[in-house]
Image (cartoon, rainbow, N blue to C red):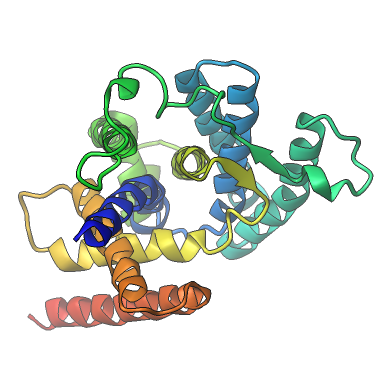
Length: 311
């Protein structure tokens, strides 16, 4: 029973962490219809920014805000490449995420006090127990780390942060800029008729989406206790699968906001991975399981859309 509760705890923690990434994908993929590959770099950038600032004694909330800003900037660069230079969406993401491989490595090595001469020993940022993080400061510090198999300190912290970013996104999408963002994805000609620049909305949407991805990276770094160069691998699949599962399963529930669907979808996706581990599937097969789940989510989503068009 304790093993089961511990597994549920991990599923919920990971679900809330990756839900923020999935909400960012909701902006870029669902609203803007932009298949953004930048997140594999910005997730790591967010983790690195948080790790370095937290180690330097910066307040964890400010460090997380800085992570968002870092992701926001690189997302905006992706948008600028697409809007100003007319580069295709997939290529924009590939260009920026490729550049971030070097940028993230250089920042990590220099930030850890090394000279960048192939010093691979400093390619990981360790967040030791003495480093203040959102999990360790007030009021999270008042919660127990072990409560009937649940780490309430992590669980509640990640849930609250996911809830905060959900509310912020919901509020933003109700503003004038948020409505223009929706219009830029659904009907770009309408935005032009309003004498508004649809390109600006696209750049802003990509910036927000990658800002959310970077915050997710900051939470992952805190959960794992480090930010390493392989942290961003597979994030596209996790984010998209969580998004598609949430919108496919709960899409017909009019009373539920899309951001809520996405959060639940992220938890369901992590639960599927958790079940695979519980039944004894080796962790080495995680990426294959992720790919299979993603494929299944795409197939189900396609069938639901086809059924909806037929009706």
